[in-house]
Length: 345
Image (cartoon, rainbow, N blue to C red; front, side):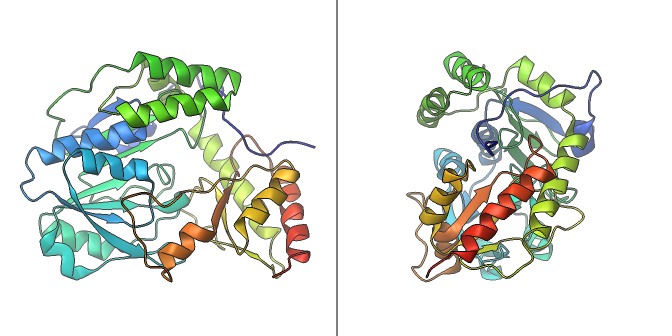
């Protein structure tokens, strides 16, 4: 039985550059390669904060604590916006005059926020920042009105330093710090060995010491030479195969995104599960690894019966990436159908 999921290994690179960064950046933009997405986000916020006298950020309530940590470290007060269960952002126009930064996220490769609200913020001088970690390979994954965006490729492929940051129409005012050697060594070792303990040792260490650290030259080479066309094709093909195999009525589970728009390249296949722990154990028993993004962080306080609390309590992510094939997805679908048929409320 093949295992579905687990840590990425290094993938073959193309001999010529993929052109990805020249597509997402204009000659007027500044691109920096960072140790992690968190480091890239903090690098953007440091630059924004130099000229931001208000320092109030409007951020999604469904997020990772490691995304909020850079805002806190950069001295920002946080205002939170809600999301519905389709992961559409629910913005409040009344806050536009109170904020100085709007933070966007296209969850799992599906960009479902209100572009008119983004424009209204832009027109009022609010800085537009997007965390593109989930959406960077989607055709609509980076809002054209962004002033800054940052993300990490480590959810997409094997790379030690997957972070990057972009400032549009300008240059970052300070350089990145040198790559943090100990963490870099741990990341490389975890990829080469597949040792999750080493990965988490390095990850938890970075959470304690994170700053605007640069990435390494080898990681930049990997990102510039990765076969993103093949990666995008495989992920869309796998997502579609899994979705099409789950058309019958399901019990206890339902896809979060029941359609695959032309522009979307999914990072994962997401489900809502009534009994998430039970489902994850069932999947694990069948050699399918699932992940929960994210636990509720210390800065987030959703209302008990809110859509955001439902998301935190019930969402689960399955791999549909380039390591696997549509036939692998058929196996995953069969396991999910078997679970559904035997589901007891």
